[in-house]
Length: 350
Image (cartoon, rainbow, N blue to C red; front, side):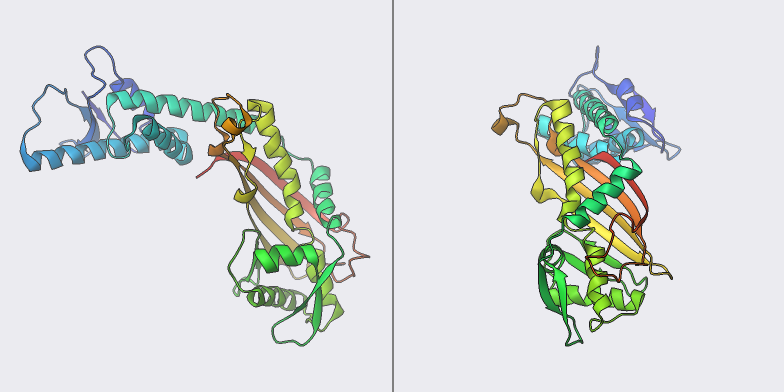
C-alpha cells in the first residue's frame, strides 16, 4: 500500500489509508521514502514480509521509519497547524511510551487521530468561549491600572545626571527591580518586559532615560522627565494582568469546573513603546498566561488538562503626548487614551 505525499497532504489522508483494519496489523510501521520519480511517498510492509538482515538493513529500516514519521507530522501540521500537531504528537508519545517523531505504526495513527480530534475540539470550544472587550471596557481597564498605582515613590539616579528622579513605587518594583527595559537605538523604541530579568538596574534606568530624552527632549534635571516616566509606565505595571487573569479563570470555571488553576509564575508580558513627531505614544503589548494542572489537588475528575493551554492577549493603544509632561495629580489617564485595540484568544502552551 503506497500513498504519494505532497506539501498539501493532510493527516486525514494518511489516516484513512493506513489506519488498522482487517489484515492491517497495528504493528506495521508507516515508512517514508522516494518514489521512482523522486516524489515522497508513504507505505507499509507486512510484518511477515522479509526485511533483510544485518546492520545495513537495520539502518535502512530505521531511516524509512523516521522518514515516515516526519511525513506524518508534516501532514498533521498541514491540517491542524504546527502547535496542535506538536502537542498531539507529544501526548500520543506519552501514551505509547515511544517517541513518535522517530517511528509510527498503524496503531499509533489511531492514538494520534484521537489526540488531534480532542485538542482541536477543545481549542475551538475555548476560543469560542472567550469574549472580546468593548472599546469602553478596554479604556476603563487601562485607566483603572493607571489609577491603581500608588503615589509612593522611590528615588533613582539616571546615568550621566546628578538629578534625583522620583519613580512610582509599583513602577520601580516591576521594571527596575524585577522586569526589564531596553532602548532600541535604530527605532528609538522602548521595550518593556514584566518577566524577571537579570539586567542591572542602572541599565534599565538608562534605557528609560534614553527613550524620554530622544522622544520628548527632556532630561532628568527637568520636572517633566519624571512626569513622563510615571504617566507612561503607570499604564503598564502588574495591575494590567487583572482583566486577562479574570478571563483565564472564567474559562476554567465555565468549561471544566476548576480543571486547573492560573499559573501566576507563568505570566509572560512584553510591551513596545514608540513615539511619533507629536510625542504621542503607541503601545503594542502581548501577554501569555498559562495554567497549572491541579486536578488532583482540587479533587476534580475532569479529563481536560488545562496546563496545555495558555490565554494570549494582543493589544495596542495610543496615548496623547499632550499631557504626558503634566504632574500625575493632573493627568487624566482615560481621557489621554487616543485609541485602543485588544484581541484575546487561547493557544496551546509550547
